[in-house]
Length: 334
Image 1 (tube, rainbow, N blue to C red):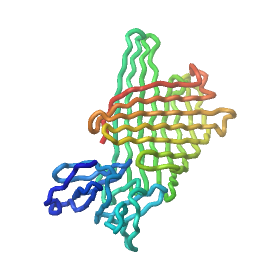
Image 2 (image 1 turned 180 degrees about the vertical axis):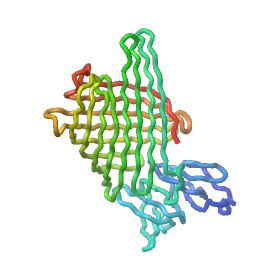
Image 3 (image 1 turned 90 degrees about the horizontal axis):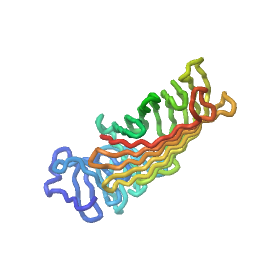
Image 4 (image 1 turned 30 degrees about the vertical axis):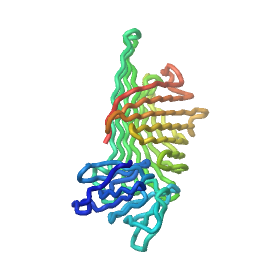
């Protein structure tokens, strides 16, 4: 962001003591909130909360301690201070000052955060109807992430209900909860669990839980590539009834995201996962999810999602081995 110039009396504004110096010569006195995906979110008295592109900043200072994450996964803790060379910042802790190029920093998290600043939340809703086929579809989704300095908790809910006229109604539902802790070098540990149901695949209910480990291979202001492996213990019940089936699955997955935060904001995320069974011979499941999100106005967005699910050995009541679809919805986030 360019063209923002602080008022001459800005240094006297209460609670706004952080300073940004931009390459175009502007000076902004503000309260730094966080850096994510190449945008620094700051709060001012005269302009409320605004976003500044990280590449436009040549110097930054704050007396508040931050968690500073670098592109290679290294983490520093401390306040931010000016240093002699432009394009660098000094991270000051109890031991001393560490000079870091601004271009190496991919995330800043304020140590003294409020509940609102720690929580990311979005909700999506979509509906479609075709008279010629007498098919109506209602989809609902909710995503929330609670972030702290070294860990996060993620909750996700999605539901797709399809009415096929005289052919009845089918549902696809997914609820998951996960805990993830981050370490230096891009390593993270993950424990997740949840419930799934899919009438198309003959699945009345699958419950699962298990640990995993992952690595961020790439992370900067516009891209993120994460890979991980793990193991899940699960229990399945078919829509046709019968006994519950217990099994253990290996998990291998990857997630790739591209961010473009020039207004209107856009992001594209692709997630791929494979679940080879360790207890049922020759069975393997697969999941692919792709989402394009486009901002309409501030905090409101449009989602276009594609999903594909595969099961080499689904319950006998399944109509096939895979299920796929394209879903469009409108949403709100904060």
